[in-house]
Image (cartoon, rainbow, N blue to C red; front, side):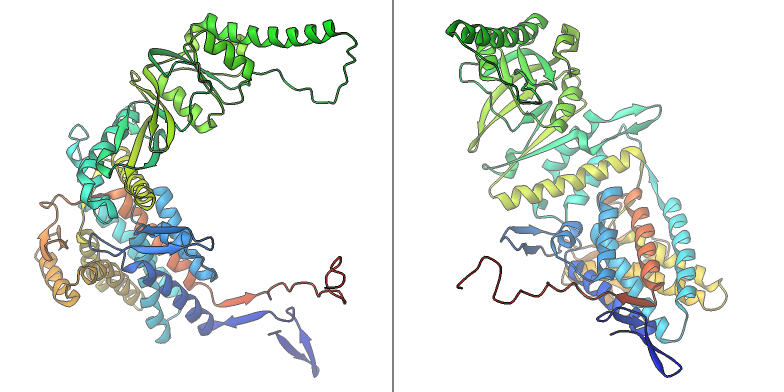
Length: 546
């Protein structure tokens, strides 16, 4: 609708015709409802007993997952407030790598609870202030709760990885995969003083359908999804010296069109001989450096392939830039842009370079690197959907290991930290004056929604479990949580269910900010959708007679 105003009896149209405007309660209600629907869609995916979602794209591609971010990414969400929750899941994934489902559930619950206060005429600003105070108190509580970890004991790294994968399709193989993830991250982690610096990108994950998940393996080096360019080249080289080249092994085409007038056959021969000499010079440079393997980011001319094959050198072309960077980290070689600069000290080393047939495709393994700062995990699995979900699960596992390496503090899982934060917040609420007290109390209830979702997904009674957990936390059992596999309240630290503090801190920060942002909106002005231009009379141009 357009927004008319009266000015001396004449309506004043401020907004473009077709624009929509909703304000006040109506706008807040619309936003909160949209956010709640999004939170509801991922709620049943939380925890080891959570369900998976099957998402089908417009092209018919099927994704089966229980990963919060993937579910929200694949759902084509249109509502602007709902999109904010998708952003929250993305932020959580980028920052901590895990906890995407929890953050959306808590943000949805914060909004749901706020709506009850808004209906009682409590102003959104007061609720937001209360939420901010509650978030600070919650973060303070997490710091007090956290268990410091000695990184020499790898057991805790494995436990956080196992916990992150317990809720995924690959849960049956979580111990096996966690072992691989810990080895991979520790080999690429670099010590910076007392702290570690780690990049998840240094662990390359390759997927190939076939065999079973148990055949997934860690390669101390890099796997390239490429085959050796020439059939005459060896398929296997031991103790290989590797040249990494960022320029093309071919004669460059000129930028401008040029004509060459050739009048005699001798001139053609001279012309071809000149080209051959240029390519031979390039290959001689590689041979002189002592390289036995050449990996090139750009093209390799057929003639260059022939010369390299005669010298028994393996060549691979058109490797991705990201793979080249990982190869440099793994083999210790330098990426050379100008071939004339190539010398022996630029070469990388690998104990074995070999082309192998994996499933339908040929892949090149560059493995047995001495001290690789980039490694590869090769995922195998019975179906494409399974390997794709294993990839997502491993990403979460690698991320939580990184979180603990960078900030070596952990918390027990099973919603124990959320319940402890809720207990502290309820006590804290008593000390606050006025209406902010109500906001802090409903914040505590929103944190308890994680316990409710976990118990409902396990087919248990949330009221019984929640009341038992509350009473245990009141008695000082700070790690009491719901162990959904047995369906009982347990001390989660004894059950070995651990999560990094970084994940929980990011959940509190992101969900509070998202809820506050949505609550602050009291006016939605939506422009009208663009209309397609009218068709000219007589149909589309060029469609004569139809």
